[in-house]
Length: 282
Image (tube, rainbow, N blue to C red; front, side):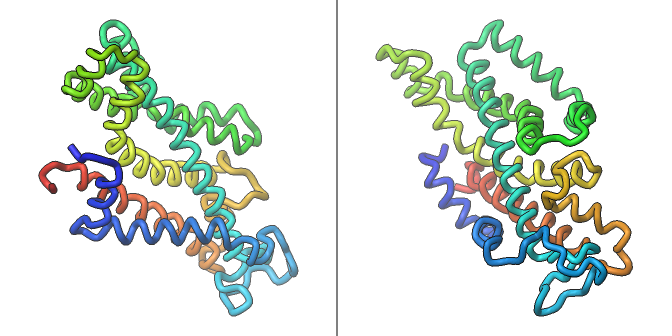
């Protein structure tokens, strides 16, 4: 077992595949661009010359403009800010719920464990996308906060099983038994001893979950069920570019490339973290 979270991150950074380094650098650049660049770019909603329509990339518009003459670079960067925020918050919510259920099931055991895991098994038997579509069709225009809650509360089931497995593995370790023997309350044992030692697998699940949510949000936006206009989103931009694929391909290429690059970077980091957790790589 890796001694600390810092050691896990160091091993992931030094992973022989190099994915940890390249993925981390790419994510940092994407995050900094989404966080810091919008004030220095054009207004993503500005339409200076609607009659001109979509114009190809140029010095004034490095990514070109869309059919409403809106700057594509500004829209891609602003869409990245929204997509990354949605993915990050949804994953935090799903990890919080999944960790709580997994910790309770693994530590308490008995009928509580059986009940919680049967509920999780039943939820896993239903495709997540089907559940999300059922929830979203009741809204004509879903608020951004509601979308985050829907994505977060439908993605914790696998996390709960992962945490439960880690707790069952750690339950009879010497440091847990010592804490209980010294009179530590169950809550203290869970929070101070079990949860920190399950942080490694949770970090891997969080990293890979961000990529899944980005793809899911982009797909929902492409179907018109995700982030609603005029707020820019990568999936929504690809949807808007359907009729321009031949005449103005840059309107689909740049948001599509942003999705691919972000998910690839997240998966590279997740694979490096997973490799760092593998005892055979020690």
